[in-house]
Structure formats: structure tokens, C-alpha cells
Length: 120
Image 1 (cartoon, rainbow, N blue to C red):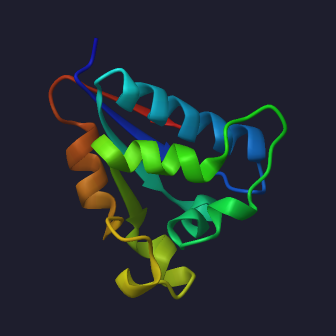
Image 2: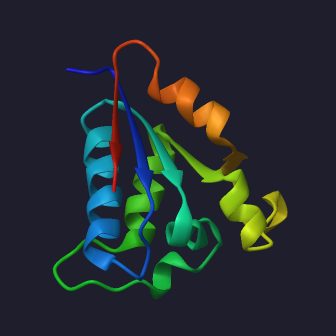
Image 3: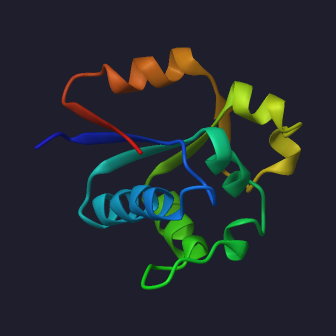
């Protein structure tokens, strides 16, 4: 099994099932002891903003704020640089602990030894 899991989530409220799956898989992986790096891109970028995850609803799914809290407890959440810029988001606008980084860092993480990358 890969020792590190890099997940890129491109979906937000526009594709709620895909979005929820990404956060759920990330949280379960963290709970299983996997080193997780979750990347917020596209419409999921909004979930880096405090309070936005609480607005997300999908029947029969875990609440997004709890999943985010679980992921951040032992993993890392990154907001895509370009996605942040397109939404006029800076480090002062995002949840404490969320970093902003670009494609170079994503590729570096995804290509590391013993790493599995998933895109939702």
C-alpha cells in the first residue's frame, strides 16, 4: 500500500457526490494512518474559506466541516495558487493551516516514491 496519498478534488457544490467522495476518502485515509495531502482546485477551492464547507449539503454523507477537521488533524490541505487567484483568495482568506501552492508542488508530491495520486 502507498504510504502517501495525494488527492486532487476539482468538484465543489457543482458536483456534490464527487466532492464528498474526495473528502471522505481523504478523511478515511488519514484515520487509517496514511499521510494525506488534499488539493483543492476548481470549485472545491471555496472550501478553503472559513464557513463555506458548512454550506455544503449532500444527503447520507458526512458533514464537510468534520471531514476537513479530520484531514487537517494529521494531513495537509492545499489550495491551488491559480484557483485562489481566480477567486481573489489569499492566505488571509483561508482556514488557518491551509497552504496555497501551485502545480510544481503538486507534481512533486504526486511523483514521490510510494505515493498514490487520485483525482476527483
